[in-house]
Length: 243
Image (cartoon, rainbow, N blue to C red; front, side, top):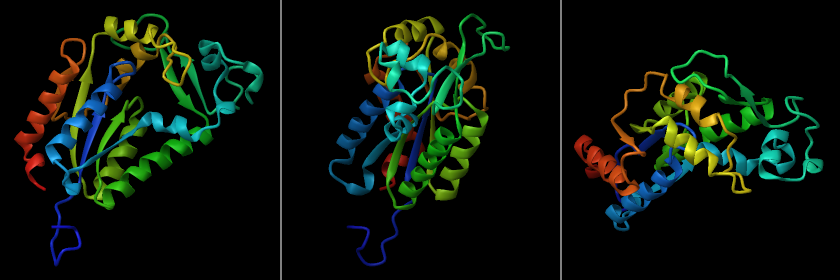
């Protein structure tokens, strides 16, 4: 039956929030999870999942607003940029060095991503759009790294206000493997990452007391094994049988 058939009331949509540090393999995991859930849905539109991501903010930005440090990492043309120098306030985001900050890993470098007001507004708008999707009845897989407590509170408020049933996935990976992957990501595109972001984000993104429904370790499990574990946990909670 379709959503418009008689007085049928569909259950609340599902938001699968996948949280983990930079370079932990979240995007690969979320794509594979989406494909697995599409197979299980077998064409039922009420059981289909869309995939959204923190990184979607990059799709909304002019490349002229990229930071100098990031374009240098990619070997790009600095003359195209609005920003003249790192941290001049013109770039939509920057990386700040927090090597002296307390944290379980320590080490140097340890970088934190920060937005200027334009970039932060775009992120807030993306967060709000997820609530709109859920209110329309679309199930979501949300690929995020909740680096800041402010981001976490903003996202959770939006998801709760949408009426969605929220399922939390924690993605963990050893620092050694995070940094190995980070070093291999200088691919000339938006996926490149500066050294130190993975180490610092691993200290931060799991520091907000999220009560995960399931956790996976992408340094010890294959993507398929991680997906199977998440699907099994979804089944245990009854979320895969509620459509």
